[in-house]
Length: 141
Image (cartoon, rainbow, N blue to C red; front, side, top):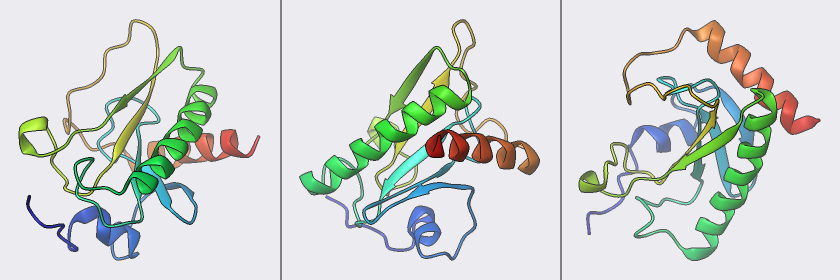
């Protein structure tokens, strides 16, 4: 298996070397908005532990990611009055993975509204700021 690259974009976000729209952070996980969202509120949940994907993450670290993904899913559903949630996780290039730091996509879904294609457009920063504020408020209330 290929080794974890400490210079991947998500590792740089964790170290504060690259900006993001932070939604949530605890001792083990970090959640932030996807800047090329497939739907409003599209959030990425990552472990703070260096893990390339589900194939090499420690079980306890994966459990922390799963708990945070659920927390973000509940907040995203509330914040966007969503009808459901899509969770996605891709491992290795053949599985669709592009950034090689484990991440779970949490996407609030509205019935009948299709997801945008992956990486199809960069969202306006003001929209992302609004979406982040909505999810953060839902986490607090």
